[in-house]
Each structure stands twice: as C-alpha cells, then as structure tokens.
Length: 456
Image (cartoon, rainbow, N blue to C red):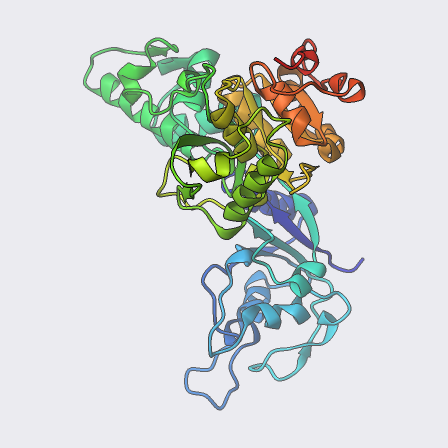
C-alpha cells in the first residue's frame, strides 16, 4: 500500500505528536521527526546544489537516511508555521513531497537523483488549517483532534500523567494519595487549556512539594484533597464559577474559538446621550467591527418592533467594548452577541446571565452558522453556563459534542435574531410568531419558557 499523508489538526497539548509516535510503534516502522516551525528556506526541504559551499541534503532526505529505511514514518511537526522570504517558499517545495502521485520521483538538489517517497507514511501536525496554503492542504487528509473534556483530562491524569510524574520525582504510590476531586480542582482552578500540558506541569509541582515535605521529614506521606490543594499549589488561579452570572443590562456572554480551545467572551454595551456615534474598543479586528455595524443597521431598521426609540441613532452614543483589551479579537460569530447587548442597552431590559450565544448576524437579522461549536460548548460548561443559543444550521454539529457536555447544556437553535432575543432577554421586547415561539431546545434538561413570553 502507498504511504498516506495525514494532517492532525488540533489545539496545543492534545497529543498530536504523541499519536504519530504511537502509530510508528503500532506499525513497527522506523520514525523520524522534522520540526517545520520557523523554516523559511526552500533549501531546507529540497537541499542545496553541490556547487555551493556547505551544501547538504534537505530535511526530507536526511530524515529518511536517519530512519535507515525507505518506508519510515516521517512526522512533520507544526506545518502551519512555515515561513517564506526571498530564499523561496518551503510550503511550495512540500507540494511534491506530500503528493502521492508525484513523490515517487522526488528530486533532492544535493542527491541529484530521483528518490521514491511513495512508501513513506507522512504525518503532519498543525494547530489550525487557516495558515496552511490551500494547494498544500488539498494534498493531505485532515483529521481533527478536538479539546479534551474535563472528564477526559481526569482519566488522562490518573492513568498517565500522575504515574509519570511520581516516577520522575522518585515518589512511591503510597507516599502521595490524591483524590479525584483534587485532580478536578487542579483542572478547573489551576489550568485553562485545551490539552494537558499545563495540567502535567501542575501535577509535577505538586509532586515536588510533596517530595520536599517528605525529605524535610514534615510527614511520611501526603493525602491531597480538594480542600487541602491550596497548601501545595498556592491560591487558585481561575474561578470559573465566580464569573458573575447575574442578569445585567447590556452585558452578554459570547463564545469564541481560539487556537487553545473555546473561551467565554463578554460583550459590554453602554448608551449615553450624544449625537449618534458608535465607539468600538477591545482590540477588535475588521470582521468584528463589520458585525457591529451590521447589528447597528438591523436595530435601526427594526427600532419600533424592538421597543427602541426611533431616533436613537441621532440622540444616543453607543459604546461597544470587549474586555481583555490586550487580546486581539476577530471573527463573525460575535454578531448575535453584539446585537443582543445593543438591544438590551437601548431598551433597558437585562440579559440572562446563564445564557451564552454564538452566531453571525446579517442586515436582515438572519443568524448564519459558525465553526468551533464543540470547543465553544465546553467553554460554556466550564464557566457555569446552562443555556447556549446556536445557529439553526449548526444543529448537525451537536452530534460531535461530547455526551457529557451535551447532557449538561441546553442548546437552543435560532435562525433569526428575534428568536435569540426571545431566549436571551429577561422579557423580550416583541412577541414571537407562533411557529418561532415553539422552537424546541435540544440536548439539555427542561425546555425553554422564554420563547412564549408576550410583548410587554
């Protein structure tokens, strides 16, 4: 069988490189790893011609020589971080390497003879596909490796990370006993990540603290519980449950996708007397600014139905702000979040604090689908959210969500902003049509009673 070209895509720390190594062991193949992060010279892939001083083969031929076989497993790490400059484009040089129809006659400039790479099994890893050139991405079979749930992290910590750290720090099993609740507290209160790298570091710090106590003869063994965890790891770094889930005017919980998983992104809107200016702050990208303008125009076109003063765009200044201003933010999925926050601020109706939402909004109020729903839903659960409003076209993506997360959250599909407002505001400013009001929530306990509240 010809060698396959697979691309493992996922956030940092989810085990992409480890999977490649495990595949090499399972297939009993020699393995060589090539790190492509920061490579910006085409000669790193194709090699130098022998006429140059210091000429050498490219990394691909070097890796095959290192493996010592013509059918190894080559792991190309961080393919999404390739660079390019005046010395060529290494991503373009990889087009021949990662093409099963062409790489049987791969020509390295140093070797100057065609070499058959068709039997090599290529595994590439990336954090995101957005920075990989489309022709290169087309040659690879993409396999998504999503974030871990908290329950998955617990099992990984118990079965793999903790025994590894105990051995590394010279501790016996009976010298450190840690409860499941303590490991859960480490996951929730000391880490904020998609993978398990920081979790492993925190468990290592815990083991060092216990080892120091045993060596200094303060105790012979340590029993760590959720209540005694701060004695070993210090004050908690994150407080997801204390996110402030009370209902507030002009404050909406949005959901965002990042390279390290999902996160809760709050949108704040304040309205003051003025001349109709719209101020946008929070280090926003162009797409997000366009979403705010689209939301503003939609509210102007539906001002009467939404219970907003018709001349608000002449007499009021609107300030839209996203906290954590040092973090760049961009993307269209904050459209419904911005719209809901603006309507709440203009009408004075509080937004439900236990509701989060995601979706792109159009000038006509349609809610368009978004990506990264799995990571966003896990972020909502971590932050104590109970209800998530999603675009109706994303209903099919609910099948990919972990059953634990899906059972704990109530998902409400919405195809129009009116449905979002009906479920997000304490008392919606407009009555819903009969067929919209009966929109059934998915995958969570209970049903939504907000959709049927009449106009006040």
